[in-house]
Amino acid sequence: MFLRFLEIIQQQNNQLQQQNQEILKLQHQLEQLLRNTYGRKSERFVIDPSQSALPFDIPSVGEPEKQKETITYTREKKSATSKHKGRMPLPDHLERVDIIIPPSDDTTGLVKIGEEITEQLEHEPGKLFVKRFIRPKYAKANGEGILIGALPSSPIEKGIPGPALLALILIQKYVDHLPLYRQIEQFKRLGVEIPSSTMSDWVALCCNLLDPLYEALKKKILQSGYLQADETTIKVLDKNIKGKTHLGYYWVYRDPVSGLVLFDYRKGRGREGPADILKDFTGYLQSDGWNAYENFDKNNVTLIHCMAHARRYFEHALSENKQVCEIALNQIQKLYSIERQAREGSLSHAQRYDLRQRESVPVLTQMHQWLKETILKVPPQSASVKALAYSCSAGKN
Picture (cartoon, rainbow, N blue to C red):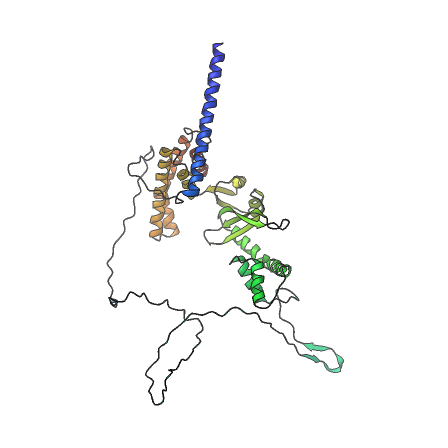
C-alpha cells in the first residue's frame, strides 16, 4: 500500500515537472511574440567583463591594436555666412540639351564677356514606336524566283514585340516588381492596349528562352565545394481562386566564393526541393538546421550549420536561461572578434586559415565540450536546449 502511495506521488511530481516545463515554454513563446511585435530587433550582444567564461582554459582574444596615422591637407575656407552644401553634380554621361536664353533688352553693340550655365535634371516619358522592316523584293532572271532580304531573328517568332520591349517587361516585373496589370495600364497611357493574356504569353515564352542560362548558372554553382542554402516564403497568386494567394517557397543556394546565387521555386518546404537540386553536389553544405537538409549529411556532403543562427538561438533564449546563454554568447563574440581582425587586416585566404587555426580552433574545441556537457543539464523542450542542440550538431563533424 505504501509503495503504491509513493508511485502516485512520483507520478504527480513528474506531471508537475512536465507542466512547469510547458509553462516555461509558453512563457518564452509569449516573450518572443511580444518582442517581435513591440521590442527591439537587434541581436547585438556586448561582452560582460564580469561574466565568467567556460570552465576551461580558453585563450582570450582581445581587440586588434589599431595603428594611428596623422593626415594633413589643405582646403578652401568656406564663407562663415554660407551654409549651402552645394548642388549634387549631374553625371557627365547624360545628354545635354542647350536652351539659349538671351537678355530681354537689346544687345546691339555690346560685347559678350561670358555666360552663366544652370543645369536642371529632367525626364522625358517613355514612348512606344513601331519598327518597320522594309525588304525590297527582286525577281530573278528567267523566272528563277524572288530575291529578298532575311528578317533578323526575334525572341518570339512571328510575334509583334521587339527585344527591347520584352526586356523592359521582364525587368519591370522581376527586378522592379511591377505586376503585369500595372504595366498594361502604363502602355494604355501611351496609346497601346495589350491584353493581359497576350502579355502573360510573352513572359512565358521569354522565360523558356532563359532556361539555358538558368541551367548554366545551376551547373556553375553546383561545381563549388561549399554552398550556403536557405528557404524563404513568398505569397503566390492562386490562378484557381481570384484574389487569393498560397504560400510558396524560394530555395536559395549561394556560392560564397563566386557570389553566385541560384533561386529554385517550390510549392512546399519539403526535402524534395534540395534533394532534386543537390543530388549531384559534393562538398560542404551550410544551412540553418532545417530537417530537409539532414539527408545530405553523408559521405559526399558534409552538413555544417551557421554561426549567426547559433548566436540568434542563444540570444532569443536569454530571458529563459541567462547564465547558460551569456556564457555561449561570450564565446561566440570571441570568434566574431577574430573574424573582425581578419576583415580589418584584409588577410588573404591562407592568412585567415592560419589565424583561425591558431585562435578560433581552441575556442571552438573547448566550447564544443562545454555544449555536450551543458545540454544534459537543461530542461528538455526549452529554448536553451534548442540552442545547445543546434550548436552541438553543428560541431559533430
